Each structure stands twice: as structure tokens, then as C-alpha cells.
Image 1 (tube, one colour):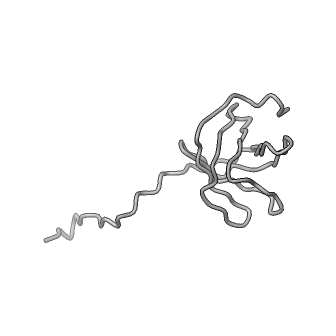
Image 2: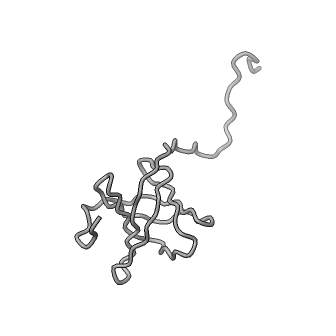
Length: 103
């Protein structure tokens, strides 16, 4: 019998979504295609990934380098989902600031 004052949480079978702190950081998607760059905004960021806001007309490959000047780091990214002008990415590693990027 479940105690109505202190009920047990239901197990939905789905993993809990990681807390994603909201941020507002500028970033640059470096596609590696003729040193092509796409400006973006990080909307939330956590240890293993981020949500990016990109221009609607931008073409972003499934894997790319995301340089975040405020962090001073380039994150290797893999796209997990796409919705209109938003892209969810998973970080697969980091690199130092790209030499060809001026920001």
C-alpha cells in the first residue's frame, strides 16, 4: 500500500532529462566545408551538449565544430535533433580555439 502523504514516484522507464541551464552565448559553427562558418546562439548548455539557435536558411551538417569565444573552447558536436531554427547537439570532445577563426 502506498502512503498518500509520501507516495513513491512512478517509474516511467525513461531516463531523466539532464538539467540544462539557460545561457545566452554567441557561437560559431565551423563546418569544415571550405572553412564555412555559421553564427549561432547557445540557448542552453550542459556538460554533454547544448541547444543552438541558428538562422533558418543555414545548412548545418550532422557533425561540426562549435567555437564558443566566451568559453575559449571549440566543441566537437553531433546533431541529436532539429526543429525549425533550433538544433540540439551532443558534445563528443573539445579542441583549442581554431587557428582559422578570428573571433
